[in-house]
Amino acid sequence: ILISKLPDHGKKFIEHNKQIIKILDKRNAKSKITPQITDSLESQFEKMTIHDDINEKPANHNKYKKPKHINFLSMEESIQLQKQQQKIEEEMRLTFLKEQIKVQNDSD
Image (tube, rainbow, N blue to C red; front, side, top):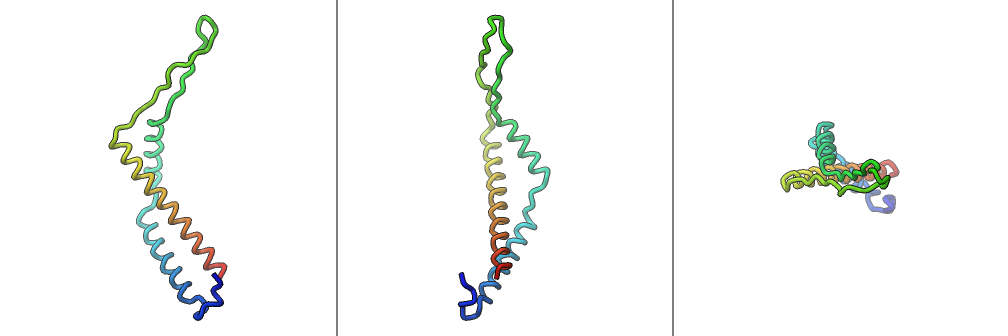
């Protein structure tokens, strides 16, 4: 958008962007990702991982694979993880939007 060609030289556009930045700042202040949340997410993720166990060589010197061991989560834990993941994705989108708006304002 060429702001200089707008009738008000982009004053309304710049003010609108400033208001958006203020709203995003308020939301970010309310929802900060704490290290405790990330630690709990990592521990829950470790519970979900698939362990690929390969045994030592048996007597006939052929390696063989045991069946993969999978830790299943309960539905409640899965739903909680999905909600937390959605919150983190939303916060990442908001920060990206905020950075884009700041870059636009700085270039203007």
